[in-house]
Image (cartoon, rainbow, N blue to C red; front, top):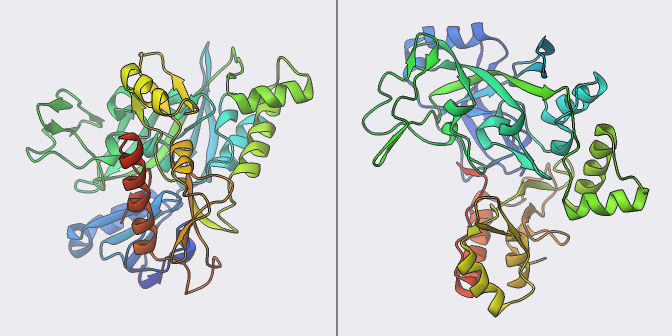
Length: 372
């Protein structure tokens, strides 16, 4: 285990914001974590877990010890009557895993193609696209407690998945974890009591994730972009590979490649409102893009709200709103330039957008990325 000092992080975050880690350790195996925890100084240090850096906004140098997760490996772990259980290391590239599963004949992740980031970050964010969320294909994961060094397993209910949310995005409640890590599993006995909430943010490192991919596969369709592709190709029953290819084409046409233009993808969550709120908004602006959900609530398209407020193409310093998709904020500087957007500029732009949308629609937009 090597502790690197003053490590530039520009190449380790997809916004390509210039910042440094005061100290960084690369985690390529469980033994690296055990070695880290055996050092009393490193064990006691605040820690920041870094995967692909595709969902963070760095607003300055990172003082916490950065754990750069580089745990690799992917395999078919086992077959059940209903599913293929595929396991992948937390450091694997997410899109590469999706492509690999299809090449092996395991369908189910195709709607999630081309989402940037690593496998370990996928359950943290509960990533989702085109009608599929990570939780729909999740089996379980293994993680290591950064206080005890104990490896434990979490299943879907214990991850507390929500819309772009999970137990990994929240800190431990003031009352403590109540023995959450115990005998190799996490006990969720009282995950939420009053204002207390179980959280594992920066308390553990995800080691590997397992996915249950259905043998009786059916395409997940119903989104306008996919419907257009079906009509264009005159294909009523697309294969998993066709959906994968179409999703890649759609995303490449709409979203900037973070290897070329710094960004974190969708910057804001699509807000949900009550049917009554939606009716009120439609009365003011009949063109509002909205989707009715199974629970009766209505999801609004955050990109449409931002676009309606006139933000498309606007900038604050070197931070801008992408011309092709108002939901995406971009770094207008070159990806290796020391003079690109700062985290401060990105957040100033984001707050200005939030204010505009709230003043016009009464909707508070919530950012997706973690601000560091």
